[in-house]
Amino acid sequence: MGVESVLHPGLIVPVGHVEPVPRRLRGFVDGHVVFDTRRALYVWEWPAYPQYCVPRDDLVEASLIDDDRTERLGAGPARRHSLRVRDGVREGAAWVWQDGAPEAVRGTVRFRWDALDEWLEEDEPVHVHPRSPYARVDALRSSSRVRVEIDGVVLADAPHCVKLFETGLPTRYYLDRAHINWPLLRRTDHVTRCPYKGTTSGNWSFDGGTGPHENILWTYGFPTVQVASVAGLAAFYNEYVDLYVDGALLPRPTGTPGVPARPGGRRE
Image (cartoon, rainbow, N blue to C red; front, side):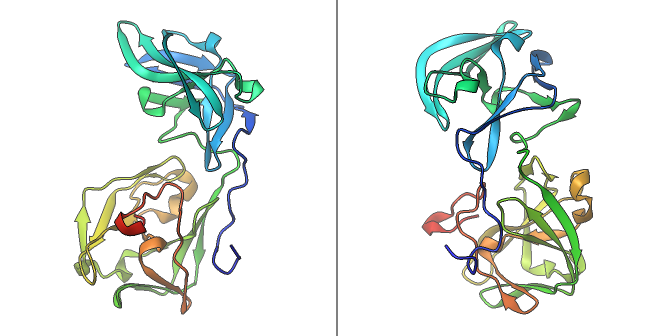
């Protein structure tokens, strides 16, 4: 695919790549420490972001129960385990990497993210999934004019924006709320979370044209410090709107990581 149809750098980390995690990592269940390690490893099961691998010796108030089942994860075979913490058991919460997985992670534990209640890097919480050490997110003020349409209906026309550049994802264009046609939009209770940007504080749909077009616009009221300049601004999914930047219509991205497919092959 040529650069004329892809307007952002692609992901370059191969599946099976392993690197050390240079941070203290802890996981908790019901307030109890499942593990506490300074020896964790990253392993990439897909190019977008890694998973943590924890030495089994670094489990603290927890133990593993062999489920007698081997499964193939993205980086190789792993034996599934349940997690016992005090008197509670969380079924299928972890895998131990087996022969056929990258040598450095064999014997280490890969936890299912939602099997734990809280993850900490040093003393800071991590949400959704581990942050990739090869990803960066930059939010830059820009004088580019941005117009957004669906089926010829103008939903926004802004004389400037904040461009958010995130490794492996399309550029997102955050607009001042004053330049969005809010009466045409319907607020929803949809929420998305991102380990780099935070939790959305609002999502909106558009019912006109060939709609409904669900959850095409979002805002971060309280984003992470790294992207504080998008606070209170709103961005549309490039995938579902006609987005003009300085008068030029951008191609709609397809196959965006983390953006699930809509019926009929569209993505939302």
